[in-house]
Length: 247
Image 1 (spheres, rainbow, N blue to C red):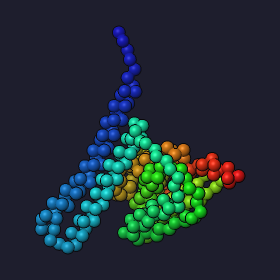
Image 2: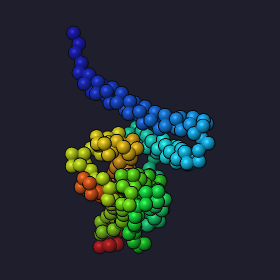
Image 3: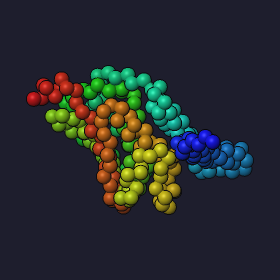
């Protein structure tokens, strides 16, 4: 008689099944929406100008949602299997943050949000993978815009200390309950509330953002008050050479 503990295999199989179920759902939902609106545009409703404008906006949003899901899935998979190549280079952090802020400003206009930035031009350059760091910051800004009601505010700020550079994304959005704050960085996790369910999303943006920041030796943390807003803090250690210069 041979006995073998297959707990790990069973848990891995269960996790794989959950992962496939989540991905299938997140892909199917926007695809169904795209199919419905494209069919409607071909029928009598497509003759109505107001409906066409609404349909174009929905199709645009759902296409962006699909693209974001696929990109995040690919990047997370590469990180987990060790195939993601980190190509670090010296990057002017002010310019990178300014570009990300401009993109967020465009998204926020549709909700009449007040987007502000506090980005000192003298921020030290950092050695990072520029595209990966851009993805992490964009994901935080997209979430801030998404979960902040109309006429709310979003702030992107950065400060430099002797040992690190801190990047903050602050919003006046719906906030995160204390019991959810430890879980929001898990893949596919979304708070089980009517407000969150009513906002499109796939629960991968924050997971990928933290993975990217940790690949750079940094940390990503959150502080939030339910109903008042959230603040996400990225802390990146400065290069040793820069630290010595500061000393």
